[in-house]
Length: 346
Image 1: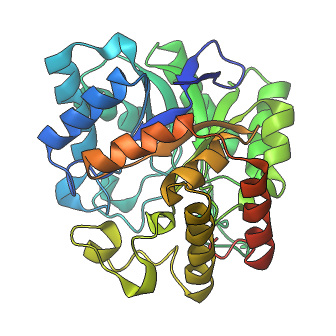
Image 2 (image 1 turned 135 degrees about the horizontal axis):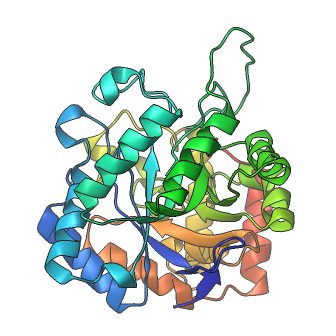
C-alpha cells in the first residue's frame, strides 16, 4: 500500500480508501465486517462514511452504515488503526427523514449530526469530518451547468466553519474537509481560514473518473497549489468503467440493476467512452477497472481514491490496483479517448 499526507495535516492516509455506502443496503453487516478486515490487512487505513448512508437514502437505512462500522469497532477493537472520515448533510429538503428535511450547515445541525454519528460509530472522535454538499444551489451531484439564484437563503460558509471549529475545540473532530464543492467554494473556505481564526480544510471529496474529469478544470490547480488533497469518489462511475453494464447488460445484484434511478453515468456518450476505455485496457492486458483506478492514483492532486465494492472479489481487485503502473502508451490512449469523449458524465 502507498500512503500520502492528508493536506497540510500530520495524518498519513492510504492511497486507497474504503468506501462504505452500500453497507446496510446491498451488503449485510457480516459482509461489511469481512471487507473491513480484509482492507485493513491489506494496509488500507482510511475508511469513509456519512450520516446519509446507506445509499440510496431512505428513512429505514439512515445511519445504518455508521452503525455497522461502530459494531465492527466494538467487536474488533481496532479504532486506533483507522483514519475515520464521515460527513454531515447539507440542506435536506429532498431527504425529509433527516432532521425533518430542515438540515443546514449551521451550528445547531452540524453539532447535532456529529454527536449522533459518534454515537452510531461508537467512537469519541472523527479523524476527518466533511460537509457532504454545499449549503447553496450550485452544480454538484451530476449538474454541469450553473444557474444563479439571487433569492436563495444560505448558511454563510463562515458559520459552517465556526461550527466545525467548535467540534475541533471539543476534540470530537481532528480535521475538516468539504465534498461536492466547486472551485469558488474551495477558495472561499481557504480564504476564510487565512483571514480569521477559522479552521483550514484538509481535503475535498469530489467525483473523479475517466468519465468525469471535470475536477481538472480549475479545482485541480487549487488542490495542488493550496495542498488540499482530492479524495476521489465514484472512481469507476458506479461500476460503469468495469465494463459490466456494456451493451445493456444488467448484472444480478449490481447497483444500476437494483436502482434504475441512478442515471448519472449513463447515456450514449458514456457508453461509447466506456467501450473505448474497456477496449484499450484489454488491448494492453489490463483489467478495465484496475486501469481506471490506476489512472486516478497517478494524479498529483489526488490524495486517496475511495473504492466501493459489494463483493470480496471486487474489493480484492480494486485494492490490487495500487500495484498497477500504466505505460506511456496506455496514458496516450486514455488521453486520446478523453479528447474524443470529454467528460461525458458531469
